[in-house]
Amino acid sequence: MAFLEPFLLWGALAVLSPIIIHFWHQKKGKPLAWAATQWLVEKNQQQQRGLKLENIVLLILRCLLLLVLVALLSQLVLNNLKSKADNQPIHLIQPNALLSSNYRFELEEARKRGEKLYWMDENTEPVDGLTELPAKPNFSPLLLQAAIDKRRHDEAEVHLYLLNTDGLATVPAVYVPARFRLHTITDSSQKPRAYLATKGGQKLFVNQAGRLTTSAVLDPTLKFQSAPAHTGPLRVLVQYSNQREQRTVEAALNALAEVYDLDLSIDHTPTRATPYDWVLTDRINQNPTPQTLYIVSGKSAASAAPNVRFHAYAFTPQTDERVASGQLPEWLGERLIEHYGLRVSSEPLSQQELKSLFVVASRSDRKPQTLVHNVLVLLFVVLLIAERWIALTKNA
Image 1: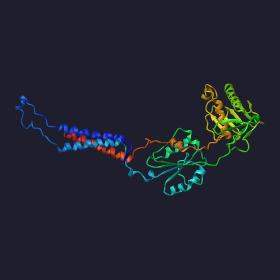
Image 2: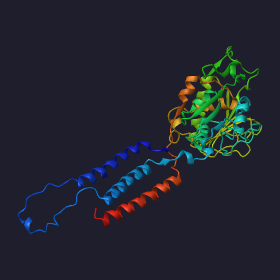
Image 3: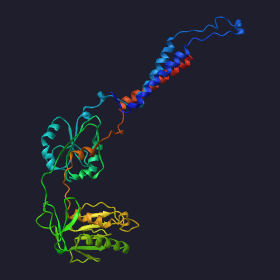
Image 4: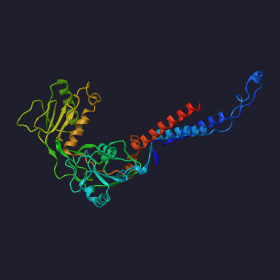
């Protein structure tokens, strides 16, 4: 037996009120001399003292009324009425082949015990097998939080299986139930980093501190790909119907090129013979080229292609905060880094960082058991009717 709002149990002390009132009314009165007493009949002035049986029953009913009301407000939950499935551990797995392979034995044993396994994605059905990953194995800390909130039970232990990367720390915290266990592994395979070959023999890459930098030689402490992801000038098409937005975007590109020695070849009208590397426009291209990075402003539509990025606002100081604050060149540089895969996102978090990231938080969205709640309501109504009937008929 448990209570969802246990602090309201202090209200049970109110049961002392009817007991005190009962004995107060039973207190023996003090006789007072009165001149007209002789005209009263002696039997009418006699008062019955002591405890009456019906008064004791009324006292018990009033005490029970208060106790049942406290149980209702505290939301009584009987653990023995909960199904066995509600108390079984739940396993949430990040859709990753390395992760499912590493914990295959533990997960298979859990499934044999009847415990449910789920991928951390939009699918709400349990996993039948670990051999096939979801069709779209997307993962983010927001999907992780949504998966926990969707399937959590405060009585069940939640097991989380995750790749330990710094991508987990893109949210302030991940809220988990009190009973949870974290299983993480680190992808030890160091993939070579990509880089761009710019003008003057310079190379554009992300250094060990995670910052975009330009240098004549690559960082010898890092592992890079044998060939650059792009060589020579970046062919860019800037085409907007609003001339102010056209000038704003072109100024941001020139600032980006000046800081990182990028060789940008900018066109304002498309040429069929030119395969563009970067297209910035306010018009949707129905047949986007997979190798081209598209940034479409003024559109909030979702894109199925990873190389097409929609921005909800036009790139003007009046409509976009990034433009007003001068952050548009930096934002465009981040999109370029993502498109060519220059950034490495496999740096593991320390144990202290993982401990601070996962925060235990109880949820108040659970509902009391319907059967228990209805029985208590019915009992309260019956006790109230009985108390009122006895109080009115006995004039107590």
